[in-house]
Length: 203
Figure 1: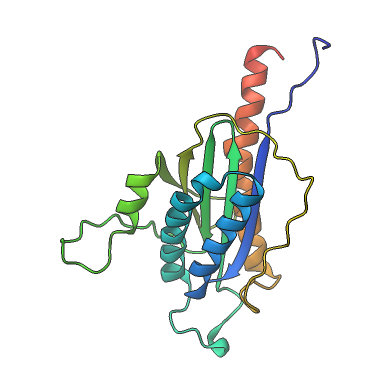
Figure 2: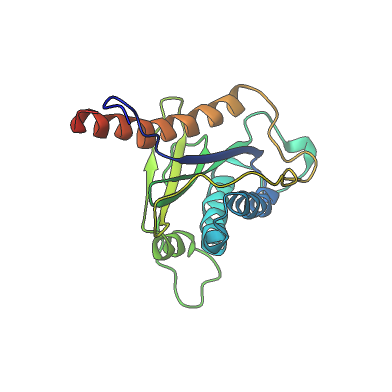
């Protein structure tokens, strides 16, 4: 191999923008199951689904509508979700348009809610908040893969993800913000460190 050859680092990424309403939680679970099956990472589906569900639930509460009447849906009711696998980590990421950070609560034993971030903290290697330049926030959680990710074989075709009609966010300014926020987080946490490592190694 030539001395100046660049060895690509496998990166898997998939994202989806949805209307911020309660049914987005169930659709996020479908997205995780479909994506991880396609990536041949089914062993992580159960844990990742739980984490994504909690992150999406918080995002819907922060920026969505709790009463799913179609006439209440406006262009700003958008959340974005993303799965990303690189090196030995899998990331679940959720964008919403609000600036307020989710609050980690300490519910009583008989409380019926409030355990979302506690569950994420328990299941994930780490979680945090990213503030994209387009506004809002990306709440993300990292799960260990156990080994470096490899490009899966896509020799056999899988059917596309079928979601309920009307759940995907329509194109527009807020949908664009969601797309750009997730891409910005991918760039900052994936591409830039890869470049830095190669520069430090003299590659």
